[in-house]
Every structure is written in structure tokens, then in C-alpha cells.
Image (spheres, rainbow, N blue to C red):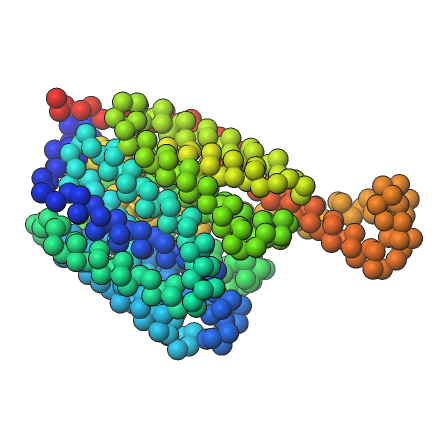
Length: 505
């Protein structure tokens, strides 16, 4: 596709750009925040709703699966209903079902409301990205994506901290009630100032949607349930894997051979889009995988409280915000590929610092690595969000934004599953290897604990706890090293991105 056919030709002039930005970003932050804010409230929900540890995770799984299935159809629905009206429906539905989730009386009711909430919330992020690009001229796309990226990146970071505080001070229901004032403000501002668009009627590809939904839904179920059912030792996992492969395979064949599919196959001819989707997949792995690993590591190994963990991880969000503030201007004067490469290098550096964690360290390394990683994520996410859709024709823009969000979420799910499996398996292997040295003839053991060397059961149990702690930390370090190597491996892909020619003066 030619650089002339870019989004710069489709700027919609508006009078209240600032108010539109506030309204749209309130809705976006609300939706992204809900992906992580409920995690820390699960133990409190178990007692109130009479749920077991295995079944209460459906509160998270139902939301994620519903959002994943509905994200690809955002483009078709926005054309059918008009983007403005569809966004208003999504915000209203998300806010109402969030309130209903807070009022839930048992596990079945909260799972049902979270399922519907995920369906309404799926379109909010891709539509907000489309609005931010449409109401800003091309020379302001960088700053616009910096504001949009700030909401996307900071939401998951502050979610656990805010959720823990609300649960401790009030109760778990306020994790959902907090969306009410945000949703109302976003709805009123969007209804008053969002520009209207012309409907673009096109037929709906029910078969293609069903196959993609099958593939995405089964994959999300596999990733969310795998750790609970011990992965491939369970028949459930094999069934989900088979359904996922079947869905994606049939959808791919259908996309290539059929006409009038709900995602136009021509969209994948855009090199920037395809490369950007690959990048955001990796960024998704790193973004949430790190957030999943750090809190339990700080609490179990370093014995931090939940509040202290939140404060120690807060500088990561500060680093992201600083990066978002400067990258919007840097993108106007520096090649976006240089910014992406610099951001990936900073992420790899932060992960290298994290491989040097020891049980005796203070929290300085955690804070330093968090700030560096936050800076790197901002430098990657904003330019990537801009350049991925920069050469895409306007009619494919919402579809492209939907795929961008979908791939990021799938990457996050896969990343969390991979690092969790690696940590569990490596902890067992490390424990076995370290235990081999616990013998009565080891002079270090005799020096550390003469009673353990003599075979005292109580002393040996204490030594075993120390060994388990060391094995667990080594497993965390192995995960950080894996993510560092993964980050370094995608840096050469930057060369595939191309900056569109700007014919504007």
C-alpha cells in the first residue's frame, strides 16, 4: 500500500479535542484497569460468594475470554452501528455490568456479569485508538498515541495496587463500583463531543466469526485453565488445544479463499501492520508477565507486605509516565524505528538487572529495574501504536486497531502461562539439584547448621525452607533471563518497519 494512502488524509477537525480526549481516555483506562484490578480481590470473593480457589478464577477467565472473542468483530460492529454510537453502547454496557458484578449474590451471577462486561468492554480500546487518530492531524499522531498509550500501560500497573487498597479499606465490591463515576463521565463527555460518522453497511461473516471465536476462546481457556488442571496431563487441555488449532486453521483457510469475510484479507498486505502485530505480541508477553512475577516474588522471598510491594513497584509506572510525556515530542523529530529499538534495549537492560536479584539485596534493584523497564515500554508502545497503523487505509483502521488489541492480549495470556510453567518446573529442578549437596559430609552444612548435619528433623526442615527459597529465586531469575533473550531476539524486526512518506508541508 502506498504511503500516500495513509491516515493523514482522513483527519476529522473538531472543536473540543481536549474534552474528547479526556472522555475517551477515561473509558479506556477504566476498561484496561479491570483486567488486573480484580486479581487481588479473589480471596475476599471466595468467602462471600462461597467459591473454591479453582472456581473463583472464572471471575477473571469469563471476562478475558469474552473480551478476546468480541475484539475481532469491533470493526464490523463500528461500521454497522457507527463508531460514536457503538462506543457509547460499549461504555454504558460496561459500566452497568460492572455495577451488577459488584452487587452479585453468588459465583454464578458474578461470572455472568463479568462475561457480559467483557463483551461490552472489548471494543473500547480499539475504538479509542481510532478516535485519537481521527481527531488529530498527522503531525499530532505521536502526542495523541502517547496519551492513549499512557492509559493502556499504566492501567495494568496500578490495577493490583488500587484493587488491594479498595479491598482492604472497603471491600471487594468496590473494585467494580469504582467504575461507576468514571463510566458516567466518559459516557457524558463522549455523547456531547464525539464526532458522528457515516454508516458503512457490509454483510456479516458468521462462519468466519464463529471459527475465529472458537480459536481465540479455546486458546484463552487453555491459557487460563492450564495451570489449574496441570496442563497436558488433563483431557480438558487437549480438547481446548484441538479446538483452538481447528478454529484458527479453518478461519485462515476461509480468510484466504472466501469473499466478504468480516476481516478483509487485504489488511495483511500492509507490512507495518503485520510487523507491528509481531512486536506487540512480544510487548504483551513482557508487560503482564513481569507484573505477574514480581508481586509473589517480593512477598514470598523478600517478605514484603502487599502495601510495600505496591509502593516498590510504583516507580515502574512513574517510568512509563515519564516516557509517555517525552515520547510524544520525540516521535516528531526522531525516526520511530530508533525509538522502538532504544525502548527494546532498555527493556532488555532492565531484565538483565533483574537477573542479578539476590535474597540479601534491598529494594533499590527492584526500583531501578522498574523505572528502566517503564521507560523502555513507553518508548516501544507509543511509536509502535503509531507506525503499525500509519500506512493502513482508513477503511481498515478499526479492524487494524482491533487486531492490535487482540494480539496484545493473546501475547499477555501466552506470556503469563509460559513464565508460570517455567517457574514451576525450574523450581522443582533447582530444588533437586540444590538438595543433592545437603549431606552430613558437606562442611558448609556442618558450619551452617550442625544439628541438620547430625540429622535433626527440625533443623533439616529449616534448611529445606532455605533451599526452597533459593530454588524459587533461581527460577524467577531464569524467567527474567528468558524474557531478556526474547526481547533481544525481536530487535532485528525493527528493520522491517517503514516510515510513511509525509506529503504534508
